[in-house]
Image 1 (cartoon, rainbow, N blue to C red):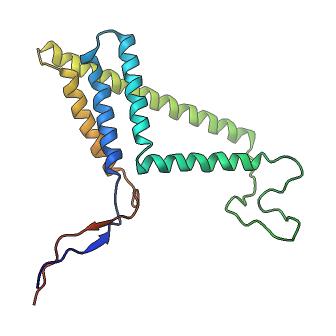
Image 2: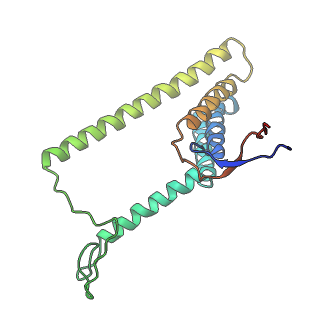
Image 3: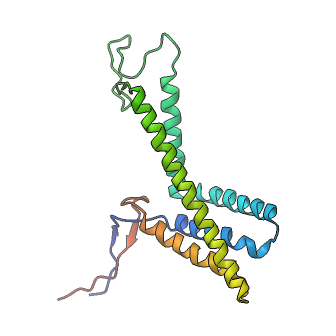
Length: 194
């Protein structure tokens, strides 16, 4: 019996274009010091890397999901700011029809102490994240400069390639189940036993 490919959907998939974009963007970001000496120009080039990378990411499945999520939040915010006299989700409307949308939520009152705790926690997390990012940036730059001092050609390119590959791999491993649409993919050829 001839071998025939079968198709199925994978339960765990990832967006390969997004992973590649993350990796290339990271590699370009860390390669900039090899291209430009002046700090201000490096900052402009790194900004350009971020803008171009983000523009490309918005065209991936992951980017479209992010845009859809932002639109949903925007729409939810707009719904809460309805002018006086209009019905909100969950209220009775004329015609005795109730809107049972997922936005039918009861507002929760947050105590002032809890608001302070949330603000302090958020500030601490943002501060720690920023500190870690700065330490990582300085470490990557120093790594490249140490290689340059040893006479290695294009040291920041090498750092960029290593960090870009690590970023691509980590973004692939970080993809949750069902991160990309269920696309039929060919499975290994089945062998008929008979």
